[in-house]
Amino acid sequence: MADSPVTEVIPIITDQDGRMRVSGTRVLLDLIVHAYHQGETPEHIVQMYPTLTLDKVYLAIGYYLRHRDAVDTYIQQMQGEAAQLQAQLESDYPPKLTRSDLRARLQSRQNDTE
Image (cartoon, rainbow, N blue to C red; front, side):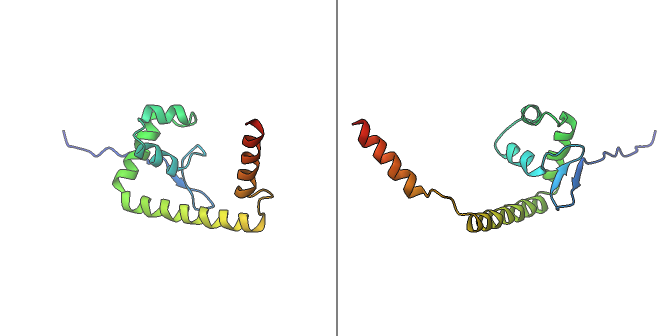
């Protein structure tokens, strides 16, 4: 009997925005990798994201482990884009209350209760 390789379809797709997701779900590969780095088990990751299946989580983690450098670079790029977007939104729509305003309110309340 000849050995024949078993092939598995990796359930990772890249959406129209360039984000890597688990196929058939809206769950980002970033989230699975983050949970994996936090020590979560694949079973717990499925509980965290009910649209996932256990086999897809294992395959996604396996994909990450085989392509760690590329996925880590992708995640860093996505984090950089998110930081730029957040900075742009905060610039375009500054908060009406600043941190110093909130601290002053808190101090005032604490002084009132004393």
